Length: 261
Image 1 (tube, rainbow, N blue to C red):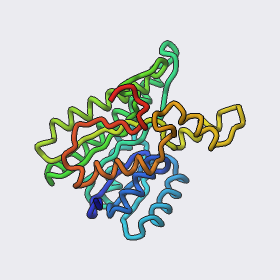
Image 2: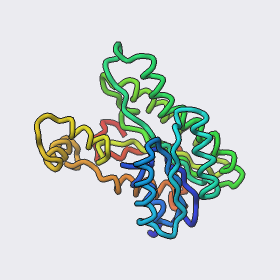
Image 3: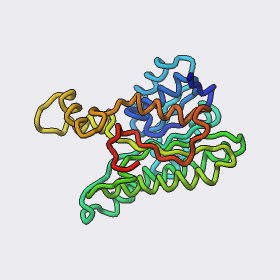
Image 4: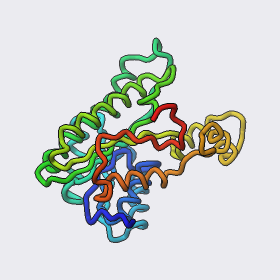
């Protein structure tokens, strides 16, 4: 099966590195036009250069915006429309992992997590859905975490905002299915990304990245941590015409690590 996006326009938040950049490359190489959004100017410039190298014929743009605010979401959407035309595919990927003992998590941390992971998805979806509905074609992919289904202790607020994102996914999928707008969630397990690179750097045992990856992968049924390209391949399928009968799903991309399906 050959997957092509046929010039569809994709807006990917948190797209300057890690999973976001891997998805952007996959979409551009499959014939899509891609706008990536993040806050860091230096990382965005590097991402745009990498995307142009990976897919020289695609329209690509890197947009600096803080999507924790309504103004930032509007800026991201407007910049994408100017650069690549209509937004046919929205990937809500931006997110951090705010966590800690429940009694120690402040209102400010709760609000920051919800603004970035939930309200940004709400606001950007609200911006792109009218056009998708008019064209009778659209894809929204919400990148969450397996903690949305099976939260662990001391995982608030991140697991709560992810669970809300899963509910948003299903509600939008049901509401916009008659308009051929498909809405799905991808739940991340342990996959190579900047987050895991940072965790390795914080490890005081002075072990190599390869040793650290092998250690982290042992509890995973597949026996290893995932690759960003494997995650991107699933996102590409959901974004494509070939994924046209999947909506309202929350798909674990975790090597079998989640205790629930």
